[in-house]
Amino acid sequence: MNKVLFAAFALAATIVATKLSKAAASETAPPKFTPPPTSVKREVIKFKIVPKTTSENWELKTAIDAWLARESAEVNMYGDARGTKYQYGDSPLVDAKGERANDKYDYIAHAHRDSKPWEIKYPKHWGKEPMMQTRDYVKLPNDYGFGSSTLARWIEENMAKDAAAAALKAVGGK
Image (cartoon, rainbow, N blue to C red; front, top):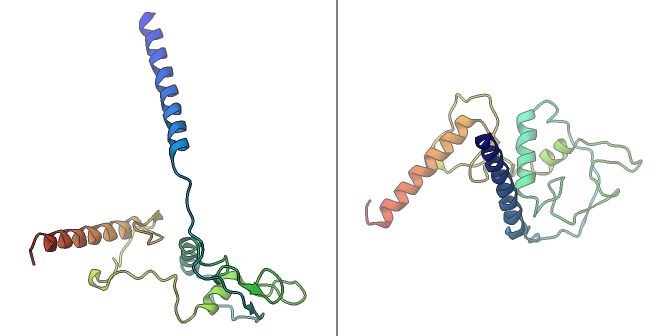
């Protein structure tokens, strides 16, 4: 009976200690800092209907969403600089009647059709990413967005090679 009570007491003490340490950690953790945008656009963007190009391209939509999340301090939810004003209110997606005329992804793809900032650019010396990848979805290292675990492993391996080369160079190697 004493062993059962002791085990129950030990379990309860562990749970309480874990909760207290989590609470202390959350109290001492600095608040998440979001830097202010470096540029705020003050001009008004005139409304225009853009071509429909992204309707079934889920990979493109996912890449755009990852880019918007990475650059949220600099761009608004439509990929324009923070503070951008639109001709008919708060959105480039509605026309003068207040009806939705554009798709968010079509608008972003059209507005950034030359630069395509959502396309992840790996260092050239890494070569091409793996052709065959698993069909899972994980967060990739170093703010490369999301992709397969195969791609995550490829990025980690190349980052390790780069770190090893930098370390070798630092100690006087080739």
